[in-house]
Image (cartoon, rainbow, N blue to C red):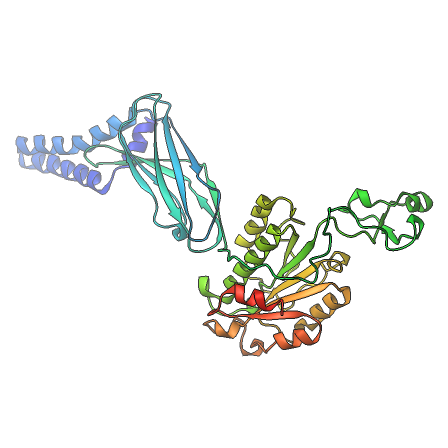
Length: 414
C-alpha cells in the first residue's frame, strides 16, 4: 500500500487531470442515466490509476556512482563526469536522470536511460566547466521513473556528492634574480653554525612544529628544557607569500574584480617559485595559512594544496593586515606581498615586516584602474604606494589590468 500511495502522490498534472475528468464523467453519467458516459469516465479514470499501480509494483533498487576525470581543474578547463547507474532490483522502466550542480557549472545535466535489466548497469558522461574559482558540489542525483503516458513522475533521490575544486588561472612568469634566492641553495644541507663551535650557538625553547633535527642537546641537558638552534639556515629556499584579500582593498565585482586579479597573481607567483624549488607558505590578510604550512618545493605536484587554498579564498571584512603570524621564519626567507589599496592604517604591518628583516617584494594592484566603486566608501580610496614601499626598502611594482603580470614581475628585478 505504501508504494501505491507514493505513486498516487507522484501523479503529474496530466494524471490528476485525467483522474478528475474520469470521476466527473462518471458522476455526470450516473446523474443523467447515461451508461456510455459512465463507461468512458471509468476508462479515463482507470488510466492514471493503472499507471500508478504498474509503477508501484516495480521494485527499483538503484545505485548511482560518479567519477570526475579531475577533482581539481583551472578556471575555464573542462572536467568530464562519468556516471554509472546500477540496477540491483528487477527490470526498470525508462528512467530520467538529473544531476544537481551549481549554476556556475552550467545547466543541470540530464539523461534518458532506457530500461535496465536486473543486475545490469548503464553509464554515460557529461562535461562541466566553470569561469569562476571555488569548490563546487556535483550531485546529488535525482532519478525519475518515466511511464509511457506521462501520468506520474515518481522520483528517487541519492545522497552521494563529489566536489570539484576550480583553481585560479595561472600565468607563466619569467625567471628573475631575487634577493633571497641564495637562501638554502646548494646541496640542501643545513649551513654551518654562525660562528665558533656548537657551544656558541644561539638557542631558544622548542616550539610545536620545529624540526627535531635542530635540537641542541647540550643546551637541553643543561636547562632541562628542549632547546633548538636558531642560526641554522633553511634546508630549502623559502618564500612567504601574502595575499591581501580585504574587501576594502579592492575594486570591481565578480571575475573582473581586482581581488580576482590578486588571487591569480598569487597563484602564478606560488606556482612559479615552487617550480624553482622554493618552499612556499601562503597567508591571507587575516593571517590564515592558505596552504596548511610550508609547501615542499621538492615536489611540484604538491602545489595542489596551495592552489586549492586560493580557490576558496573569500573576501575578508577586516580593516587592517594581520601581523600576529609574522615570526622569525620570515627574517631569513623571501617575502612577497600581493597588495590591494593600502593607507596609513597599514603602516604597522610594513613596519613589523621591516623589523623582522629579509628580502621584501610587493606586487601592488593599481585597483583604481579596475571598474567599480571602492568597496568601503571614498575614505578608502587608494594612494600611490609603490614609491613609498621603495623608500622603506621594498622592491615594488604595479600590476595593471591592461598589462600582463609577467611585466610587473619583471619590474621587480630592476
